Length: 289
Image (cartoon, rainbow, N blue to C red):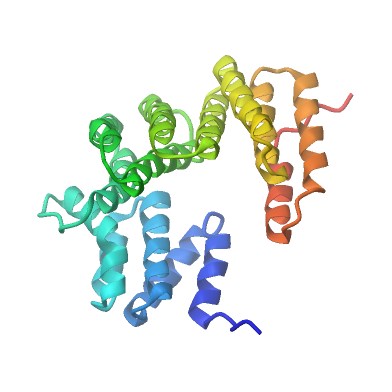
């Protein structure tokens, strides 16, 4: 019989599920939890969620600093906090804490996104790209993967944000391209096809149909060649649907949406199936005849 999750773990799981749609409420709850965080994996998990919500989503460096100041000085918490502390030190112009390359590259995502939110997208892009050679040459795969993940997360966060700022759009595409290059060096075929997914979605968000279609095709072809699971194929068809919507190709859009619908029934995990159903509901639908 499995042990039920702690109340904090149960809250953490639920907060991850709703943080993107209820960011302000989750941020307030995170700040309220900070003074009583335990010295364990659940406490560390709360700090990682806090950095994601307060820095990646809200770009609120001041709130993240308040949360870290309120948290107990536990060893597990300090380890989880180092990427955010590094980013905050860079933003404040104060000495950065000692940390590994992987922790520094995890924190790079936060630094880049806060700078972008402050209207410094060009500086943010320069900082992100400046680390590419060092990450490519790093002997440890976890460090290379940390850098690739940060680039991907920057692209994804900016893709989900508002459009209309050319510097932000440039940074988004640069981060997505960088992520693909980094995952070729650090990851598996799945990381690379997901990088093509990200590129397809980013180009589609900007209405750049030809590039969106090309990356969507690369994503889908790699999934098919590798015998990807139904959920992986589902998202490959999702980016293809967005790409064809940008291209105004109704027949191709209809094909990919139909494939998503068929794959949905083959996804066994209930939580993933629900997430995919929500994704399908947000996917552009072919116009009614």
